[in-house]
Image 1: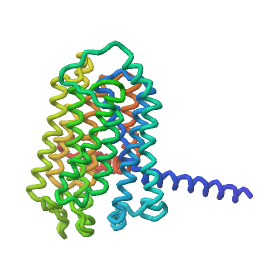
Image 2: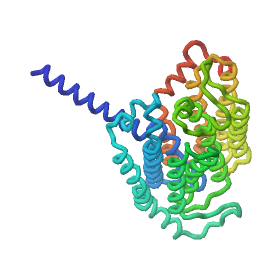
Image 3: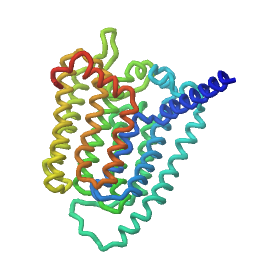
Image 4: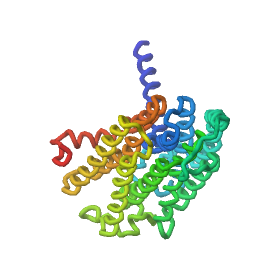
Length: 374
């Protein structure tokens, strides 16, 4: 009897674990941090002392947007993903979730985002609008949060539908980048403030980041399967190919990646130097240290990668972590405790739940620390 109870308990636990893993993959929780911080950073760029309730509201909207973006993308790319080994265990690819059910989940997240916005952020905006008028700098601009959010959904849907079928893929990369970027503008508008210079710098950084992640990182990762199935990406357009000797990265793609990387290094350094967040001296020092640290580590990582001997997956993961951390380092020190805590948790928890993070860290700490990083 005891043995039967033990087996039953084990089966329940095993089943629960499998459901959690499937949900993790289905909603792409490993990438959630990259989405979650966007409206939080946008809000923090204009209202650093935001309270916990609106911060959680922004996190809820980000979660709904994230679920739509990734689940809808998986439905649109299902035929491609069925021949991609990296997607073999995903519930949609396995057939455990039907495309119709997945599409229903994705589409249901659209009204959910607006409901969360109205419920948790509507009062915040009404209270802000009821206060005395605030003098805004000439460079600021005001857009309605609902229109920004609707535009972000529309742009993401357009990319998901035509992203790998466009004759000029950088155009659809820009569509996707604009979709994510509008989440930053939404974050500022959602808390009743116009976007300012820091908001603009964050938006420009996010656009370059998506061009890098989608046009270089993701396109190179999937290039074999994409070429075999007739998909067309920026990397393929610029001549990248999988060969028996490894990945071929032509000069055109390398120049494109280096141009994006230069912008991704320069933007946060410029924003910190110009003190776009108008931080007091102590916070400005922390910002300068954090931004210069992430930039320095990024340069060192790329130098080490150029020497060879590292797995592309490890270098790629560390590169992504550093790129995603730079805007957080730029904004987080100046935030009030509630918004800072939510932002840092949203940024770090998905990374800590991602096995690739630990694989990359083992590469650094395992068989000797790479010379450029030591």
